[in-house]
Image 1 (cartoon, rainbow, N blue to C red):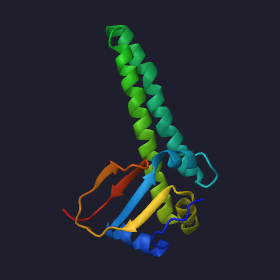
Image 2 (cartoon, rainbow, N blue to C red; image 1 turned 180 degrees about the vertical axis):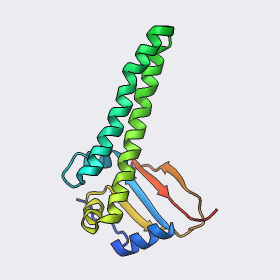
Image 3 (cartoon, helix red, strand yellow; image 1 turned 45 degrees about the vertical axis):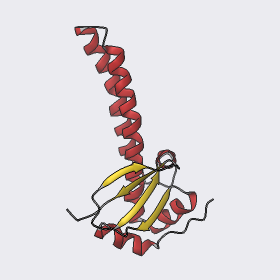
Length: 146
């Protein structure tokens, strides 16, 4: 386990409600957390449905491709598979952050496991954005400013 200095749970909830929390989520770890007993069943079911919705588009794409033309079907299936992997990771990260706002014990466990890194955003006027840093963490900056 990692010992990462972060803000306390109550400060995290307050900062998240104000839009000044700087949350970094390790997306592959968040996706693995979705399959554990740490997550409530409603989050797990929603995550599985989201994943299977994307996967069910593959046969639909193949059926449409066979009706119209065969040459672009492999490209469409590959594009759907790539989109599914990105959206699956982003969905898992969003679910982990949402549940961390609700449960203090879960928040502490996610910090200790290195799934979340949370700090107070020094520039709360910064617009919402995402980018990956060198460690595989996605930085989610949310603000209420324009």
